Image 1: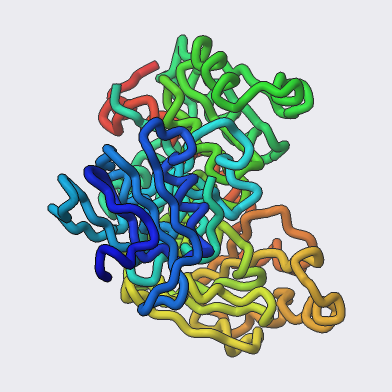
Image 2: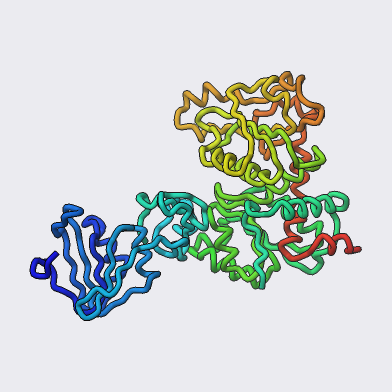
Length: 151
Length: 312
């Protein structure tokens, strides 16, 4: 995409999260706690995309997330594009990788699980990264990622 | 401090299981050993379970420990809104070990993470009940002289029955052949059949339940088919009597065959079977005492050698 066609302003320094499915945008916002960010955040919603039809994009100025933070995105949107920008140039492209354990990201689907009845962190083991099957560390219930609710 | 809590025995090695069986056997030879003299065992039953509690409390008493705790959650602060963590932290100031039954799944795992003293899981919802599994293993070993290469028949509710699932998992080290006999609605879940395939456990599924089906059984593990498990009550009425064990079904049985049941039974084992040499469910319940004495000692870091050398 040429620079003059860009619907959102270019970033000098920071992180661009591109190709977010539009219906997942606000989950990404919540997961990365962008609502508490002090630096400028540009959010593009329902933008045209050749690949996806419609997409969303987030640009966060002067913020470089840790891999741990970014890998949490794999729970919602495993296929986003992550670009690290320094002085208007993409200096690094990253892929989201599913971690082997998810701590305090998703809610257990089992209403009788201790995590839904006690003020505590949730923990899940990732059993199958490709099929997105995770298992609660506490009650052992297995769920697929497309069924989980975020905390 | 090393966390010696027992939440599940699913991950125990073959050696560890055989070690605990040996320890249980030591307690069968002599259940009264004052090896826990001066110790305090807390039994916290957030869900009532009379037989499990009595068994744990008897085990503690025969080991010479004092027992504190509650049998009815209504009397605890949980009803005032206290968290499980706070209850555990409070009790851990008083006791050396906590035996806990809880209606929530994962409660034992969580308690073991926050507690400074060992937690012994006496059942957490539909999740784990390791002392039941341990007593089942001990009973099988006691009656067959080995755990290796046995034909184990599981009958009744194989879908929700946590005891049959744990038994299946624990037996994976011992090359068993499982036979599943259950109504369609309560059949062994796909997950456990895949588990068998992954771990090289042989299994056969049966539709019928008669003298021919069970002729090769070494262990016949009966469970209760509960009405409330059925979504279709017509289906329940249709199958409810099909999984009852009757005395006249036993005439082809092997001489070494034993009938086990986690109890309570309702009518799934005909009462006249109690007087046959095949009935073993009451001895099985008695083994709960020895198995629990072993588990309490192991959780407190007391070894088989300590037990053998103890003269009190």
